[in-house]
Length: 256
Image (cartoon, rainbow, N blue to C red; front, side, top):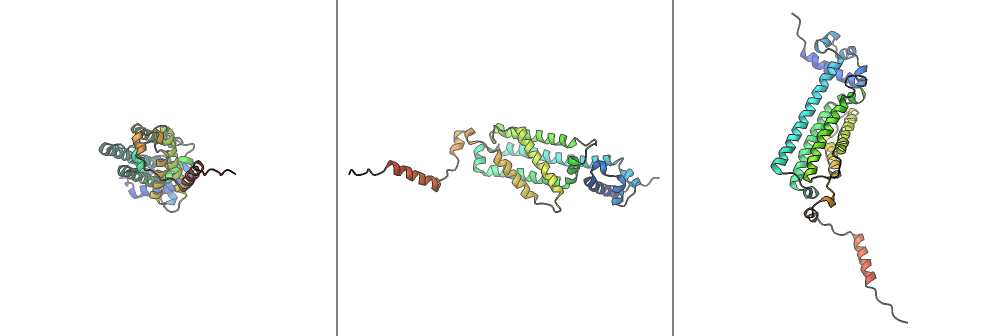
C-alpha cells in the first residue's frame, strides 16, 4: 500500500512556497527551490499539490474565505446595531454622543481584525499586486477589490439615506479610496520587519474617514444645527468688535 502523505509536510511546503512567491513572484518561483527550502523532495510536493499555481490558489482561497467571513460578521453586527439601537443621526456625530462612540468602537474592532488578516497574508497580497503577471491570477486582485468597493458603497449609501453622513459624496468613489488605502497598507506591511501597532493604524484610518464623511452643516435640519455646542468668540474677534464700537461712539471734536 502506498504510504499516506505527511500532513506536516503539507504545511511546511505551504510556508516555504509563500516565502518563495514573495521573493520571486508566482512565475519566477520554482518547485525545486520550494522543496529545497524545507528539505523535501519534488515527489513530496506532488503528493500534496498538482502545481505551484494550485498551491498558490489554495492559499488565496483561504485568504478570501477569511476576508469574506470578517466582512459578513461586520455587516451583521452593523445591522444588529442599527436594529437594536437605531441609526446614528447627524447631530449625534457632531456631538459625539455615547451611541455614536459605541458605533465607532464597533467599526474600529472590525478594522483591526481586517488589518490583522492583511498582516497574516501580506505576502499573498504582494504577489497579487506585483508578482502574478502572466498567470491566471493576474486580474484576481482587482476583482477582489471591486467586490470590496461595492460592499462599502452599499454600506455608505445606507448611512446617507439615514442622514448620518454627507449626502453629496459619491459612495463608490469613497469606497475606492478606502479600499485603495488598505491595499497600500498591505504593501507597506511587506517591508515591516516587526508587526506595527495595527490598533493605532485602525484609529488613524477611522478618524480620517470619519472626519471626511461628516454631514455638512447646511444639510442638517434646524434642530441639529441649534444643538451644536456654541463656541465663545476668539480674542481677535472681540478686539474687532471693540474697535467697531469705538468708531460708532467717538467723541465729537471741539470747535476752534
